[in-house]
Amino acid sequence: MRERRTSQGTRRDREFAAFVAGAAGRLLHTATLLTAERPGDNPRARHLLTLALAHTYACWDRLRGEDPYNCARQHLANRFARAAWHQYGALGRARPHPGSPLAGLNPQERLILVLRLYEGVAEEQAAALLGLPPERVRAICDRATATLVHPPRGPAPAVTAAKAATS
Image (cartoon, rainbow, N blue to C red; front, side, top):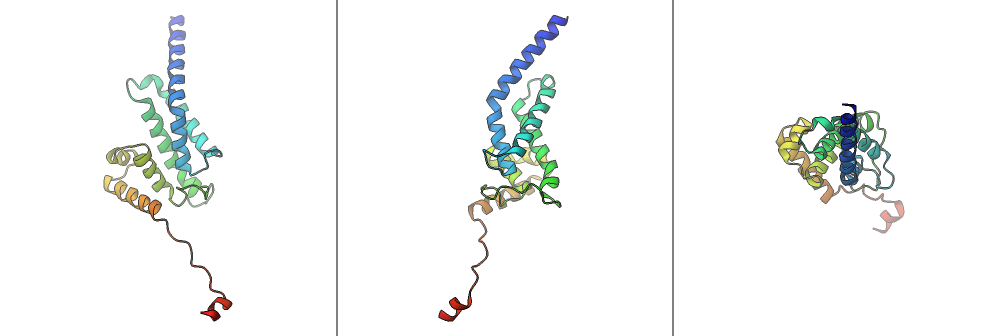
């Protein structure tokens, strides 16, 4: 009996290691997009990935034919959504890196945009995952896409007295 459990544990560890080898890179990139950090300097993204993989490992035996990548991605998205208020909300800590193309989006817009466009999650699935109506997910995704395609302009340059006199 003990040998059988040891054998099952070894098999489970090998399966999980193979999953991590194949999925960790993409999941880390997803987490980096969510946190809007630089790819080489992404401690919050790495923390999100670690938590998602730990959760997936803990649930590994209960997956029973479900996609482990979907489980890890779902946990990653939920964890990011819950943490977004503390990181980006009222306290204003952990601002996105200004050089990130997604830095101009708020956390909810980043989450929906990454799920829909990068991860290819269907609108209805994203809505169910986030507890929002599909119409709201569509509107947020459209607004985020428009913001990326046509970023808001910065403030107009200041007019100095010398420039005003020559006009």
